[in-house]
Length: 394
Image (spheres, rainbow, N blue to C red):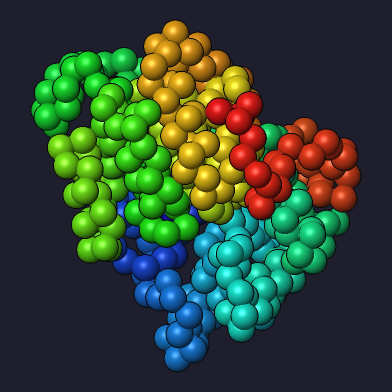
């Protein structure tokens, strides 16, 4: 899924610039689609998402075997498991350039022994890399505060994101879709204000906070929830059903861009992120976002300009923000326009890819590369997670 959704166009760009690119990950439908789309080679390395000592040792052995046969000039690993296992294998075999792209911290929100295990895994992943890319400024702050990375070998590219956004293509794709027909196809009333939730329906994505907000009277009569993503948890599915005919589950799609016209607002009530690409894609389609001050998410929205920021797990503030956007058509349009402008101006994919290439080829010759120990200080923007509600934000 990371290769399919978070590296769109990137692998083909490297191939076109003369790199011999092989994707190594678990074999599944998304991997096959990514390989076909990017025109690259594939090597299957089955990997379990959960921690499993025996399975992980088998995966490490597969990484070592693969890299020993390929002898690559560089590796780019970018999930927690690949960052650790692929990174360790590349370090052991002395691959010259070992890039770890940190897209978020699993240990955020964890406690006890698991938090320690996750800390050690993350620290090892950054230690064996020659360079580390963090995908947002707030994620950089989090890694440094937790002593997880050496700031002298860690980088932020531009304003963040791991892949940028192809804003022009998304905007054109969305403009070609008749939103009225799309709503009719999915049984959504023409006059309804649609709030979209896109991605995994998991606790750390804050789906229960969103459901609690939608049950509040202010928005209950006017807003329909559109879920784009697989509902794998029966408990979540049951809670969605309590909203009755105001919830529409579209399921997973390989053509998300064609679904953007069905939405008026994107809502990402997440508890942790790295940098949510989905916010940039929505912005390219002219859709404002309501999200939280969680790590990564806070960087994806300019509060009060391209959407709203609320505190984590704060369903009341979330309801107020959604109510404002649901009841003020002009505000939605204004924020959507500014979000689109920001996506076009600041998050070109070529800007991100050029920075990645400058790290992988060892030249460091990109004006967009910012080393973490040289980042300018900034004012606190996030507030505190335990802060009381800030009504002015919504």
